[in-house]
Amino acid sequence: MTPAPHTGIVRLHVRSFGGTPHRDGSPFVLLHGLGVSGVVWTAFARRQLGDRTVIAPDLRGHGESDSSPDDAYAISDYAADIAKLISDRFGGTPVALVGHSLGGLIAIEVARIWPKSVGHLVVLDPPLDQSHSREVVATVAQLRRLPSDDLEAYLGGFHGVAAGASLGRLFRAAAAGTYASYLAIPPGATRAWDAAPHIMAPTLLVQADVSTDGALRDEVAAEFVRRLPNGRLLRIPGAAHAVHASHPNEVGHAVRELVDSAGFTGASAPSASA
Image (cartoon, rainbow, N blue to C red; front, side, top):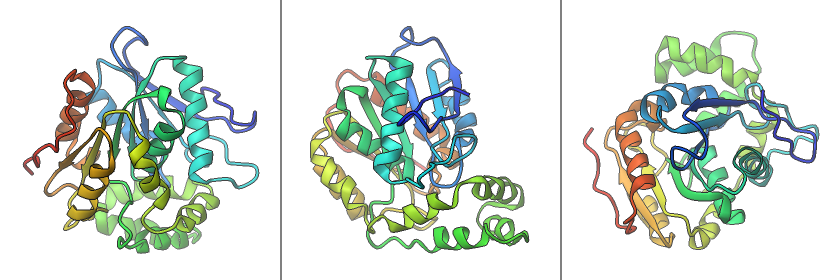
């Protein structure tokens, strides 16, 4: 466990992958979504970023990290933890910050408030669409409290039996306050929209497919990228909300291209093939 205290209390468990800091380009920091942990990044980090320095923390209240003693799970609380971790681990070296879903909202907050910490920003299917239903999150929050295997069966209907069992264990381990705080965020994540015009880092928004279980309609994704000073959009047809798991090669290629390109223009990338 790597201590990364916020207010001297919360410690974050951090998984490390890849190369040697400060020798292989920008280090990567990967932020997971609600209810899971940094372990969900293992395959992606090893197969897509194996030659880079990569860390994947468990957010407060998730996985093996400490829960918040005062039940503080606002985006600003998570972001302060991550900014402190980046500072402690990498000093003044800007990182490539990658966030999925809730992790995307946190990454946007870090890039807005601590711009010198973030050299490149990647957000994977963040919940920016006001019309997107929260029914799945509310159902998971309810079922995880039951001793039966109803949660695993529910998740298995989306992801298959084995994945449902694995996700069920992670969702049950997360602190209850993490779900309540997420559901209290105004629909459409207005804080992230307000931040967008102020994010100077080259930014890639990866959009999953709403016909699967993606969180963003085309017009919403395009409008968010339009507000970014240096943004690019990648739509991946057929991609699930966990786009780094369903289409790791496409996401890995786009992320590396963003970080390695000296000539990032901000133009929208074409849709990847399914």
